Image (tube, rainbow, N blue to C red; front, side, top):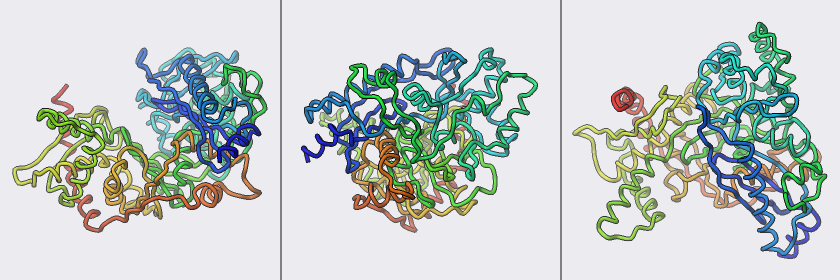
Length: 532
């Protein structure tokens, strides 16, 4: 095995995936068996400057170069090989946001990330104009809001792109994005796999009185689908990525994608009627749809897979933060008695205790809103726990209600898909911290969705692994082999995972809880108003 990896490294048969996430930049080098052979990472944090959540260009390039340096060092330490040749590369990053450049390719305003909730007026107007849901974090919402705000830079825009698109552009000279990433910029026509031309025309007409020198299509990047060659690493790009100068130019790159697309890829959830749920600090669910939805829903974002298939996405700001805070209280309690606490054991014990609780949590109610939650109409949040004198207040129900409420907003959105639109999902894969304790998070999610939930034993390296798989698909696909087939038959064939089916009593119990959750939102509203 060691010889095979060394041979792959020296002959350029590995594939590199790099993802710039919200808190970490991760680089993963994948071998011919699609398994990671080396990795490197760089931790970073966004900063709040002048009312905008942002990362500087220095943050971006310094972090990217540091992650690559650590990857190359890992290769050297493990295999004694200087990393020079790579078979293919892919870049991914947090989706959406706003990066606008002038004709000299200079950044006009600091990068505005997905985290900014400053485009509400524009998002509402665009949703009405297009009869299509436009979330605040989408690039087009940022552009219209900048126009509405009278920002001087708008008239000088020559290029509008995302973080992944920007990295790819600087390394290849190509202004392109993958279709999944593009779907976080502007609505996609799923028939053409390109930006929706009718909506582009509507936007141009909507801002025609501003007399800009550009039309929208002229400043947007080219849209590409998984499997296409999106350019090659230039000499300048190679030196920009690898400051040591060892990396050779000429490497093919796949279309840059957003973290939603790489998450779908890394969980084998790109086929119709499959889905994935990522549950950690925040939570989102993505279900690959068989057809368009019948109505526009503010709670449902419409994006695409890396191949351009339509996806219904429910994105919630809050998931495990309040749950983790309560576990922290139990840790403090134990330590007050002089006990030494193993956090994995504590989480495991408390999570499993929840499975002993009543299916409807014994009448208890909790909200995990550390921040606002757009699905239920909150711009601010107040974590809270509520019960009546008649509620069955015990540890099992207490833990169960906090697990339920971590998925409360998500279920509110998913019920639109499953109960109003009658969307079908044959398989859903869960990943993230909520599923770390075996079987518990799975059972709760299965009850919330009334769908079998699978958790893989080896989740790879997350989104960085996902974009590496997309680069590998571009490089290694056989003629007419679809991405669905490539993942199912080659990458995930024989992969070990556990599947939990929903129990009818748990499904009924979660439905009863969500009625209480919905009715009690006025209590959460009162808490927001009262506790400033």
